Every structure is written in C-alpha cells, then in structure tokens.
Length: 494
Ligand SMILES: *[C@@H]1O[C@H](CO)[C@@H](O)[C@H](O)[C@H]1NC(C)=O
Ligand SMILES: *[C@@H]1O[C@H](CO)[C@@H](O)[C@H](O)[C@H]1NC(C)=O
Image 1: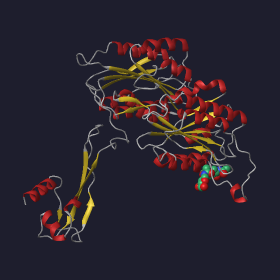
Image 2: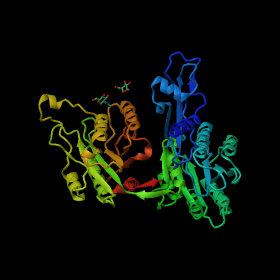
Image 3: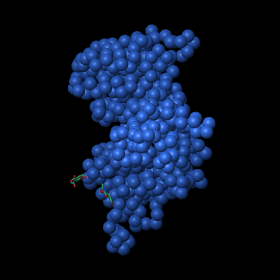
Image 4: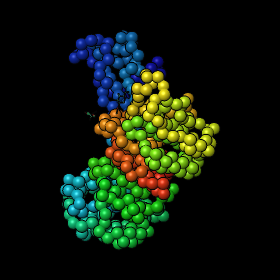
C-alpha cells in the first residue's frame, strides 16, 4: 500500500487533470497525449522530458488509480518520458563554453546585396541562439567592414541573447570596397583590451571572418591577419564562388588540437547555417581529435560518367596519396579502409571490404591493378542491361559496406569517399535522390573529382556542401587533398 501511494503521489505531481468524468464519451479509453514538457536547452545533461494522458472514467471515480483498476488498465500507460537528448534547438545542442570572447567580422562590401548581407546577420543570430551568452560564457561583438570598418555591437558583459538579437536588427548594410584588413585591425584592437573575466581563468578569444570575395589589398589583409592571429583564434568562412581559398588560408589560424582546419567554405549565404554546428564545436573546449573512422572508397565506373584514362590515373594517385597518408591506419582506434569499383557486372567482384587484416599495401596494390571497364559486355544479354546508377550504387554501399558483417564498426565515424567525374546525365535527378539518401544516413559523404573537366554541379550534387568536393587538377596537385586527409581524423566534441 505504501508503494502504491508513493506511485500515485509521484504521478499526480505530473498531471492535474488525469481523470475525465464529463466530456469524454468512451469510458476506459486513454485520451490524447499532452505535449512534451520543454527541455532546458543545455547540452550534455541527462535531462528528461515527459508527457502524460488522461483517462476517461466513470463520474464517481475521481481517483486515477481507482479508475485504472476499474478499467483493468496499466497505470504505467498514463505517463511517458524520454531523453531531452539532442532535440534542443534546430537539432543542435547548446554549447556550454568556457568564457569566450567572440567577434564576428562581417563583409559589407558591394559585391553582395542587402538581402545577402542580412543573411550574415541571421547567421550570427542563429549562433547566438545556440550558445550560452553571459559573463561566464560567450560575450559577442560585431564588426562590419567595407571601405571602412565599424563596430556595430560592442563587447558588453551584460548583453543577453535577446539584447544582442535586438541590436542585430539595427545593423546597417554599408556597401563599399572590400578592405578586409580594416575589419581585422579593428577586431584586434577590440580584443586586445579584453581581460580575463574571472581572475586566473583563461578567456578564449575567437574571431570569425566572413567574406564573399577577394580583399582589395591582399598583402595588407595578410599582414593584419597575422597580427590578429596573435590575439585570437581566427576562423575564415568563405561564401560563394568568388572567394580565394589561398586568402582564406592566409587569414585563418593554423590547425591545432581543437580543429583540423579553421577554414570553411559554403556555396551561398543560404548555406551558412551548414557550418554553424562546427563553429560551435570550435568554440567549445570539449573537443578532441579522434581517428576511429571507417572509410569506404567508391570508384565510379558507370558508362555515363566514366573517367578518361588521364582522369583515372589522377584518381588512382589521389586515392593512393590518401591511403598512404592515414596516420592511424588499422590501429584499434584508427581508420579502416574498404574500396570498390562500381558497377562490377562484367568481372569478378572488384572490391575489398573494411577489415582489420587489410594492409595498406593490399589497397595500394588493388589501386594499381584497378582499370576502367570496357564497354563491351561479356555477360549474357541480361547482364548487359545496366541496372544500377550512381545513386543506387551509393545507397547500396551505405546500406551494406559499413555494417559489421562487412567489417564496419558501430562506434566508428563512417565516411564514404566517391571518386567520379560528376558527369551524370541528369544531375537534377541525382541531386534530388542524394538529398534524400543523406537525410537517412549518418555516413559522411565526400567526393574527389580528377582533372580539369569534371562537372562541379554533378560532384556537388552528391555531397551536403561544396567544401566536401575536392578537385585534383593534375598529378602534381595532390596538396589539395590535405584538407580531405585531415577529415579522416576528426574532432569529437563531448
Ligand atoms: C531529370 O530529372 C528531373 C527530376 O527527376 C525530371 O523532371 C527531368 O525531366 C529530367 N530531365 C531529363 C532531361 O531527363
Ligand atoms: C537509379 O535507379 C533507381 C532504381 O534502380 C531509380 O529508382 C532511380 O530513379 C535511378 N536514379 C537515377 C539518378 O537515374
């Protein structure tokens, strides 16, 4: 009885209107679940959300427990709970930071429209939504630059999320030339007077530099960036096709223990949100490099998009460079690699599955002997009708190759690297199908395009953002794969 009473008391605290006598029509039937209680939006907690539902009871039974007994139902069905987990905001966890000063340096140059400028402000707003703001967490400042640089929002420890968002609404577009150096200089002078916020406690300083083009004076930009890097971690975010990768690299801080790269690129202002999660990770000192990664290399040998002999050669060398450079290959917590050439209708199976017994040499040998298919089909007539296409092949690899029966590891990060010319016959269709495939998998997809004649639209259609496409122009251009290699170790944030 004591126990029963306790359960009842506990349940009552969750719900006021458990028992309906009046309005409901079917006795002993559970009513609709109420909405879930809200989560507090703090990441890393074990917080639960809960819901409950009422029961339709006879009017003389005002006690839920008695009514449940009367109806021969289980009282446990009245209440449900679930982890708050990652459902906090836009699918992102809120990051709990150590004291961090963040300055956003926004591009207000003529090369963009007012609307595009507004998207930078929206992006900052989303960042603010996703971090803790206040004296012991993030304090933010906003600078814009074009012909001159202007402090739009000052560092102010008393700012709240809302006050920053209110001020963001008032930030004006000030079109002019791209004097990136002035923005960087102003950021440095703001950051240089920021002191530790708690005595003896380190305050991290981060500068996010957004740009959609080339700066007017690259030499000055590099010089200013160098000084700023002495004051803060500098993260460079390039937006759109006009951005110089070289300049971004010159602006950004070099890789360190917390990030393998401080350069991000996105296709358009609309795609800025795709880097949000990583920026938040970068700002959070709860991250560690990890190498537990299962990598599957997929070589596209479909007739439509088949690589030329030259492209094939560049592709093979690119893959060899990557495999050769894996630092933790086959370590227990390191990388495993599998590879396949698709489709494989004509010949014996052309693939090596993920496995801990595979040596680097086996893969390099496989790459050496791998050759493009000939168009003449040697099978029966039925075999010669091609049943697969790039999306069905990718789906098949995702569904099978990463499973434990093929040597995949449950706790590993899963990476699919597709090598292709991107010359698919209907790129729109491929893009639509890939969008759907990516929605339903945790496999990270990257691609490599060999040579100068690849179709960038096709390559982009396979991946979630343009920074995941790696084009290797020629054999001497393997340095462009450095960024890709870095992704095979990764930063895990707890
Ligand atoms: C390509 O695919 C799209 C959508 O799947 C379709 O609407 C369009 O007609 C196709 N284009 C061609 C040229 O087949
Ligand atoms: C690929 O093949 C599948 C079925 O085999 C089909 O549903 C899909 O539309 C095809 N996709 C493309 C891009 O041709």
